[in-house]
Image (cartoon, rainbow, N blue to C red; front, top):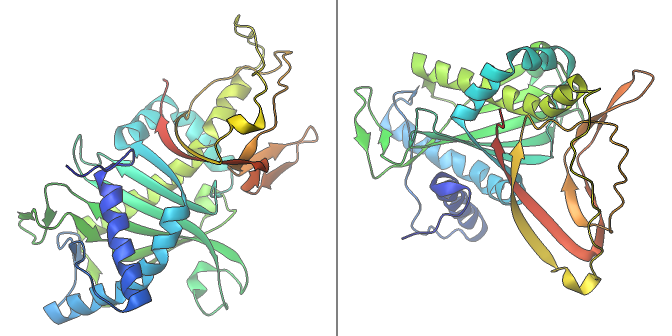
Length: 332
């Protein structure tokens, strides 16, 4: 039985396809690829020749994505978690939409959204990265000038029971992966309602009504996912004045350098709504940290000024390197 790891079969099937495309571009040798197609219920692709041409044209794009996805910080979330977040914190999320500009937590991110159509349903895989326009004419409708940064999202669908290759809903189990022939481009640093979106659709492709709905779902999922990183801060601000928990703070014991492996990878459970009371009066002195990634975040000053701190690396590389993927959950 194939071991798929923490991120699940969908992610590993997709990465295998991306690395196949990477191999083709680097060596010119076509190894046996993973099966890849397009869901015809969502996207109409014209003739068989046009379909084959479009799949072939995606190979250079997917080859470039292979390195991005491998090196990205990966987040896994159940679709039900999105529903729970909106049910529990609708007012807070709407407040965030009105007050927090859109920023990626890292330069390269991958989101694995599972159970889109219920348990064991579809998985949507999204690669997000910051990019820069070469000139204003590249994407005039996006409203960015040459040299200005913006965000790009590439999407793939996965269904373990097989992709639908016709409008009648018939599934083909030999195909588990299907391209989303749309790149989602959106502006950086704008509020939710002011963010400009551009759906860059592959030539010869026409989304069906279900395809338009799927694209809208992806866009909303990306936006809500980005806002959830600020949810805990809003909840903490509402909890100011609450007494600190009775558990006493105990600083971590200092560990000697030789006890640190040179490289470690963790899977971290990340509660999006974790409430941590402020002003506990505790000292948080700790030992030096190994080199690790830090998410971008908003810094609030007493003057009322708010600035965005870019994602970055922090720590001492001589002590080793720590990388983490995240399971995003709701404490409720």
